[in-house]
Every structure is written in structure tokens, then in C-alpha cells.
Length: 218
Image (cartoon, rainbow, N blue to C red; front, top):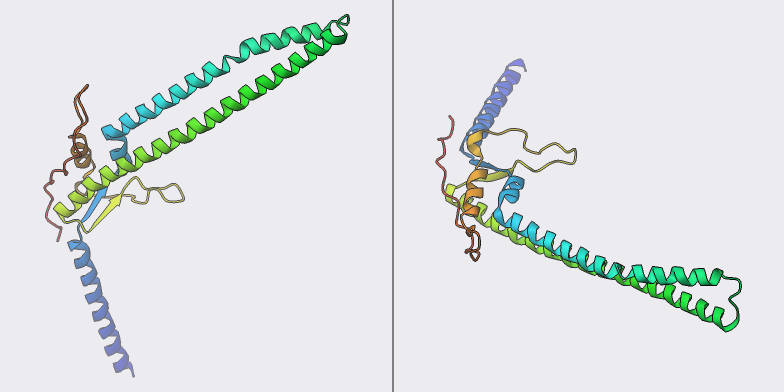
């Protein structure tokens, strides 16, 4: 029995050794790239341009609301004058009824203006958010196009995003070799299409230049 057990143990160790060797070999041959998508997104010139357009839209919205809201000032002044007149005890009869009606009409007018401003603010904000969403989606599409071209050109088996965080707030990728990362290459490739000041936008970004890679460690 002991002889059989020894043979079985030896056989099991051999299988485990072969499995570990295969795993190490597979890991050695697997080509992994690393990229910081957050940095790429923030340093892409189209991101800044999109943010500027969103800020301009918000500023225009604010000016429109402020202009309409300024109409409250003469309304409030008129309302205050009517309230002072109604405080006069000597005012009675048709004159008082007229003042009461004018006051109530002015209050209704103020409330209508407030609702109008709220509606404009809501409508404009929804439009701005939709615009921001479309811009973000287009930027991500640009980035992924260049990343995928780089992946195909360099033959990566896997690419990890070092900016991704887990539910605990800790980055999913804790460490990697510097030569695995090609973030800067993607940023340079994307920004090649940046037009000079005052010029029309250029065509879509060119693929990232292929970066020399070190031979796999043995």
C-alpha cells in the first residue's frame, strides 16, 4: 500500500509540475498592455473643446434666465406700491377693489414668470446634458478606435485600464511594468489631428505609432 501511495504521490507531483510549467509559459507568451483611459480622455484636445462648448451653452442659459428674471424687479416695485396703498385705511369701495385686483394680477404675473424661468432652466439643462453625452460618446469612440488599432498593430492579447477603480475605491490594476503602458502614444496619436488656432477641424485621428517592445522575459 505504501508503495502504491508513493507512486501516486510522485505521479501527482509530476502533473502539478507540468501544469505550473504550462501556466508560466502561457503567462510569458501572453502580451499585456496597460493604458490610463482617464488621462487619455482628459488630455485629448476634443475633450477640452467639448467642455468649452458646454460652458458656453451654460453661460448662454444663465444670461437668458437672468434677463427674464430681471423682469421681476419692476413687478415687485409695482406690487410693493399696491400693498402700501392697500394699507391706507381711508381707501375703500371701488378704489380698494381695483387695487386688490391689480395686486392679485401682479402676484399671478410674478408666479407665471417664476414658472417660465424654471421651465426654461429645466429645458436648457436637459439639452446641455444631452449635448455633453453625445460629445463624450464621440470622444470615447475616437479613443477606442486608436486603441484598437494599436492593439492590432502590436498584437496585444489583453489591455488593462489602470484608471479603473473597484467598488472599494482602489484601482483594479495595482502595479505593472512601465514598458507595458502606451498611454502617451495614444494621446499623441489622437492629438495629431488637432487643427491650429482658427483653422477648421482636421480629419479623424491617425493610428498610434508602434512602440518598440522588449522581448518576453524567459
